Image 1 (cartoon, rainbow, N blue to C red):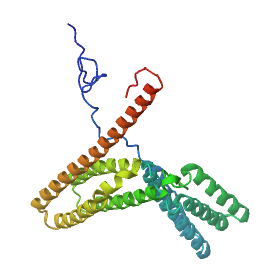
Image 2 (cartoon, rainbow, N blue to C red; image 1 turned 180 degrees about the vertical axis):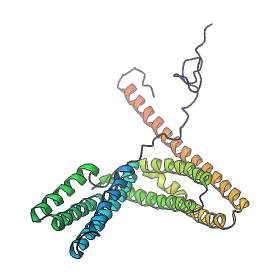
Image 3 (cartoon, helix red, strand yellow; image 1 turned 180 degrees about the horizontal axis):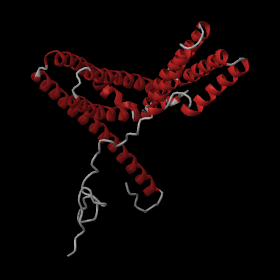
Length: 301
């Protein structure tokens, strides 16, 4: 009897005799990730201001001071814009997030307008000053947009619980950031890649807790105590590796990360299993109601 071919990478995947997939889809490294927007566009802003340095040192002292001030404004605008894009990406990656405390991109637009306005004032005149300043603000805003101006995922009915989740995840993200910064000092690419895999696992738990704040109590020690310990261990390992290239310390750190990832993954799966149990209960309740109302069609899960 003819048998359909099926493998991991075939269009239908692994198929059982009933034609159903026999295995869950395999997770891929880039699942759920989007290309970063913090790159060439924001970095070009730094280079766009460089001609002012040349122009400043070929001008009279007063004009030179004006151009240097404009240069400072434009470089500051570039820095704020880049940091604003990073904050926006972090905001969009989370289901529950507070708006950025400082609207960096908006301030970047204002500084761009101020910098170009100074160029117009010292290079041309009052009329050009207004034109350059207005164009700077408008074009910057069109190119990079505005900062998120409201919180995301905060249900007004359960604002307190959502706020607790947001604070816990903020704390956990700060620990992960510290770990990444510590490893950057070592220049150990393999260790950095290993940390990124752990971060992916940890953030999967974060998103689950954001979806269901009831999981926060069980996850709090993972988001706080465990990550705090991992942060401190990573900082000490980075210092030791930078000084002595201690191979045993490196092996111990890798083993620690393996244990942490296994525990985070197990807890995450437990949360998902609990969610599946809740779904089964809801389906069973719905079936009972339909049966009482005389509806006989089967409801598939």
